[in-house]
Image (cartoon, rainbow, N blue to C red):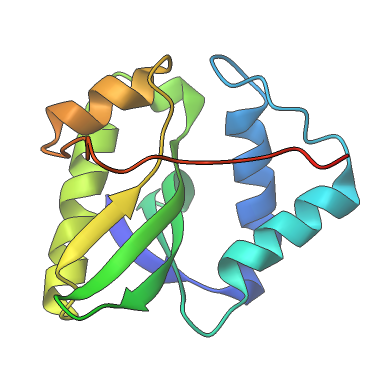
Amino acid sequence: MELVKLNISDKKEIKNFFREVFTKEPWNDDWSDEEQLECYIVDLIGNKNSLTLAYFDGDKLAALAMGHIRHWYSATEYYIDELCVKTQLQGQGIGGKFINAVEKYLKEHGIGAIFLLTEKNVPAYEFYKKHGFEEHKNNVAFGKWIY
């Protein structure tokens, strides 16, 4: 497996991989609106502070992390907006190896922290706990539908 930094020129491959993973269990997201998917992926990978890291098995994409770098007083941080492993490879240890490779890359580039959000009722919750992520009990995520 090889960790590779991707960018906007890899958009098509990223979109296809993302849709393939997140339209299946346990997420079942409806990414049938091509324009909405295009906008979302560009939002994640097309900014000057975007950081997209991928794990390749030969020439096949196996795992993907899309996020952004944020400079904070205590450290430069990587906010992971989306992290996924190819559905057929889940449960085989690829995700753990990928997280370790991402952490190594971040340390080598002076990034001192990783933040992300996930839901408690999906397998990702236990995955992150297993790999040393701590739940921030004092932080709360808020949202509001306005239409």
